[in-house]
Image 1: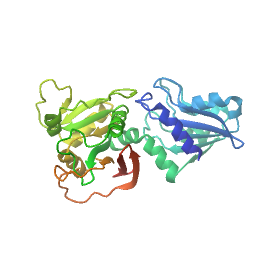
Image 2: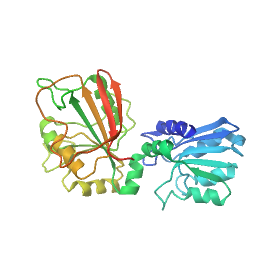
Image 3: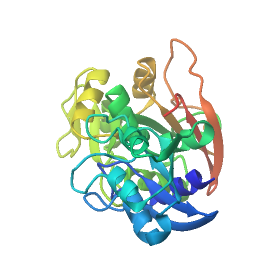
Length: 316
């Protein structure tokens, strides 16, 4: 339960902690929460240090719950593992190990060597901790960004409605702009670029940052377009984007782009907004697939008059 609280705290750093991972921490002593913290901003104190500061002397003999393995790296801030040991914490419960072994990992071993009892959780708490930093983990474990495919469809699965500009309502479109504000990049295919001239920015929301805006496919881009053209094979482009610091990529292209990514097993998560409309004609959600794609953890959420279906092609 306390890892769940640490995940909630970590979310507060979304958009400001980048390129560092999101981390939340909770200090508990004698069954009472005595300190909480999260990584608020890149270059500033990490979650563990903020939680320990809040706990003060009450951290001695306490349990620290943290979403990500404490770091051992001397960077913009001192190592969190050292701070935990110095504070006299007796036990540490970790949501997920840090795969960035050359820089940040190794905290579990260092803590254990200092006599601290360390538990790395499994099951749902571990899944929530991984989902929190799906992009960071994907870059270090797969060498590519975490890819989310977002689409808006009618009840009969069409991506356009004859005579109307939008498929979904205002609240759903606002949710998409909020997504633009926390992902690292947003991309479409050249067909969408030519048909809609999309801007792909975060508008009319309190966005902590603007995403990079990409177009996959053969150019040239239309005159005046502010998108970046990526013309190489999709898997190679994703590796290049990861090297350039892109951890999360939101796809908003049409069915052809979606099928291209799905065929190469490059889609990790699906966000499908379903509008209460029957279009009767038009393009479908994806183009032809060689084989069915099974999803997991399907969840539905009402967003205005529309329904958001969230699911995962693979676990984070």
